[in-house]
Length: 110
Ligand SMILES: Nc1ncnc2c1ncn2[C@@H]1O[C@H](COP(=O)(O)OP(=O)(O)O)[C@@H](O)[C@H]1O
Ligand SMILES: [Mg+2]
Image: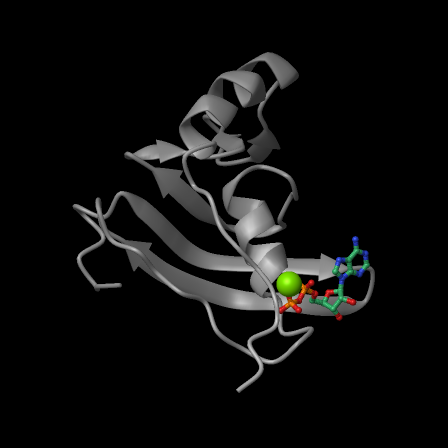
């Protein structure tokens, strides 16, 4: 991961997500450059899967932005600054971008 968000293939910016009152992601940011393989490590329940599900459009999130190849995933911002979920049709098209974002999750026991 790097801090060079201008060229990052995947840019995650201040993403926050809650399930009810439980805030699972609190302002998460990360960059992944083209060709990079990134491993997300953390305790069980820390939000790894939820973050990846936000990237590939399987979860909605309340704050922040995720871009792939410069395209804002899942949401668009209206002229008045209001953030709205994209239509099912647009989401389906974006899935094509998000599909190569593959991942493996599981427990690594030393
Ligand atoms: N669909 C859901 N509804 C409610 N809580 C959820 C849901 N998915 C995950 N959580 C909760 O969010 C937290 C993070 O889960 P998860 O992203 O699966 O963590 P990890 O992959 O790091 O183990 C956990 O407390 C989990 O119980
Ligand atoms: Mg998980």
